[in-house]
Image 1 (cartoon, rainbow, N blue to C red):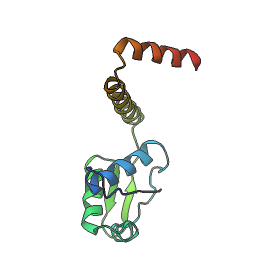
Image 2: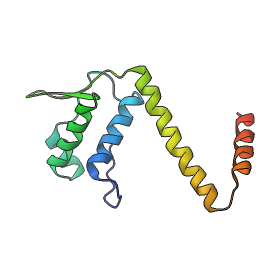
Image 3: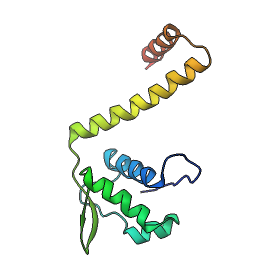
Image 4: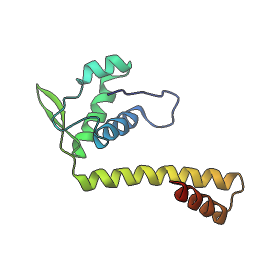
Length: 124
């Protein structure tokens, strides 16, 4: 699992960690019962505070994505297939919203955007 922290991003570092770990779980890069790096080792590797990593792990634990066993570490939980699909749809929706925003900024109408989407779908 490769985690990239963008210090210049407006997104807090712990949220970047949560998003990237959650994505790795949903995409199957991390499987059920896979261990996550320890809080200290990940903090050292990313050169960030251990408290930031702990906050991310706590958030993932609350969401049911990982479980933490005191003295043993944090492990990936099984992902419900419907949750996996829902998360994938959310990623697609976010990307589409970004595309629509960009299109509107350069003057592309909704009708033109729909026509473009139809052309792309026909080509697949």
